[in-house]
Image 1 (cartoon, helix red, strand yellow):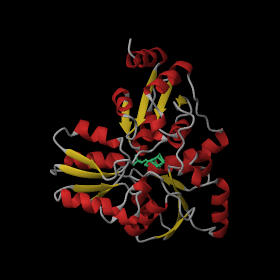
Image 2 (cartoon, helix red, strand yellow):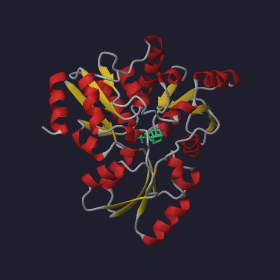
Image 3 (tube, protein in one colour):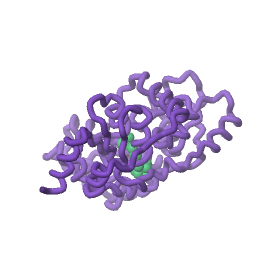
Image 4 (cartoon, helix red, strand yellow):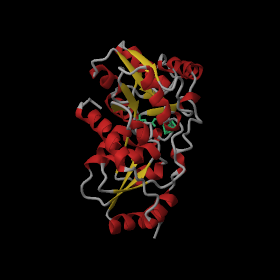
Length: 305
Ligand code: 13P
Ligand code: SF4
């Protein structure tokens, strides 16, 4: 029996499903029941009614959201150390301090935050719906965190005053992309479409033909007549793009753009995780209750994402 057979056997025996983010290793994407961006995975986890176990192959904050949204299921993260550094950049103490400074300003938090932080916001958003969420708010000024680049993108698109909390939260992987590299690639591939994740710098965003979340990029490519795409997000997405669009060409805008945290998950670790039912992600109910409210508010808005 191969490792994949063993994982599938354990899945059946334990009534488990595997949800995987678009940045997961190709072999994990291939055995997953569902592959998606952060909003799709949260929605899928929230709606899961059959499986007893959700094996969430991604990073900490995504598994936490699944646990918050579906407290009746056991949520497993295959690697305890798979933690998103951006999510660590905003602490509860920091939010409390900003709320004291701006008592009347609503707080919108990117889902790339820990549940303890989400518990102190008015509503959550993802990179797929951040503009719609902020536009839906009556306030003209919004506290927004932790991603400074996404905050700038939202500010430009909505025309509202966005106060970033903390001042310069960022994703180390998306900061690896540089506009100079895209400029050179565009000289080499003049017909290529440049797709940029909003966690990239504003200079990178200015180079983009399309800006969106990982799954929005996948949808964009499927509908586009273009044949070549320059991709500025984590390299894991290339597998899905190639699989869904065999006739098209994809060039990563920086070839070492790897999220080391996402890549901590391996088939071996998924197997052990299912076998030993670890690591169980739990959020204390008082925190979960408040974080759930912020996440559910986001879903209630029925954005296009
Ligand atoms: P998406 O929601 O676009 O998949 O992004 C999640 C993420 O962590 C990007 O770095
Ligand atoms: Fe976090 Fe960046 Fe990795 Fe996404 S790519 S999980 S934001 S470190």
